[in-house]
Length: 256
Image (cartoon, rainbow, N blue to C red; front, side):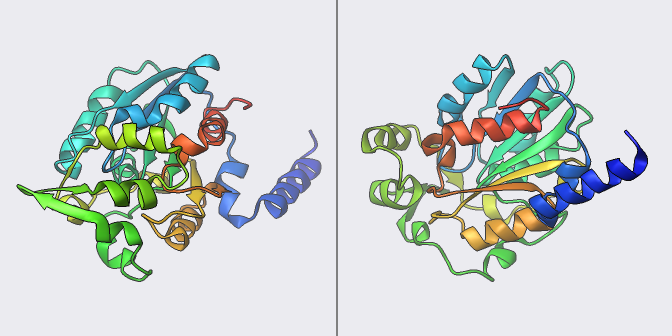
């Protein structure tokens, strides 16, 4: 391809995708055969079930991390143990709080790209609680309760605000496997932000009542992520599993 034509095609792509997609548009993703999925707060690895089946059907090797949700360091360590077992380039995916985990663990050389699903994405050393405070508090916060230093969601808040567009029977199953989080979890800070150096993708949940959708949009734009927006609750990985799987396939260098 002639240099001028190549330049024009890249420029046209950027105009269509927007500046928020610049990094992913400029750099074709490395083809990866592995995907590591990291669950967020008030969830466990089973929250990825519908995404996993779609990725496996596409021929990818998929592993879901089971986070202890006791500290960022502990969750990064759990994720690192799984990354150590991967053979070759790996897409690292985080939902919700786990965006913090993948931002730290994502500097691993095996990680070829990052995917954030309605997720936190702190910069290195950033006070994410202070950043979140710039946006209206979401209603799920009123449904938290603490027991012995761990915080969980009450059933009403889980069903209405956390899993608002998930079929009730499925939402109740997810509530049953909810993992409480250490009350200090959200105040932990990261030491690095892998999205500065790794191509990144972001799925915004426009109906999210757990993380403010405008905060999600800010984070996606700040990292220059290739971004999609879904009319979804916080659990887009459940209610929009196909779209999330397709985004991960894109990040793995494959066609959805």
